[in-house]
Length: 54
Image 1 (cartoon, helix red, strand yellow):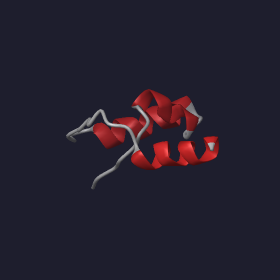
Image 2 (cartoon, helix red, strand yellow):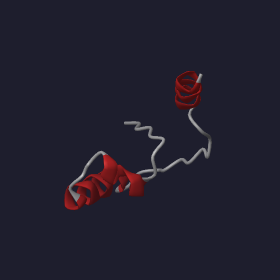
Image 3 (cartoon, rainbow, N blue to C red):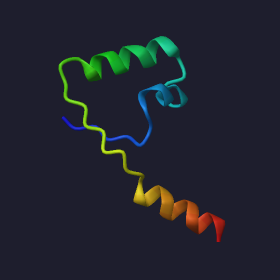
Image 4 (spheres, rainbow, N blue to C red):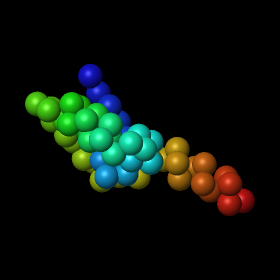
C-alpha cells in the first residue's frame, strides 16, 4: 500500500481532528513501514495557488 501526503504527520490533526484518532491512524500506518520523504513541494498545489492569485 502506498499513501502520499503533502502534510507532515503533525499536520494530520487538521484532517483527523480527534487527537487520539489521529495518533492511532499514524501509529497503524507507520508500524513496520518504510517512510520516504522526498522534500519536494506539490506541483498541483503550487499551480492551484498561482491560479487563485491571478
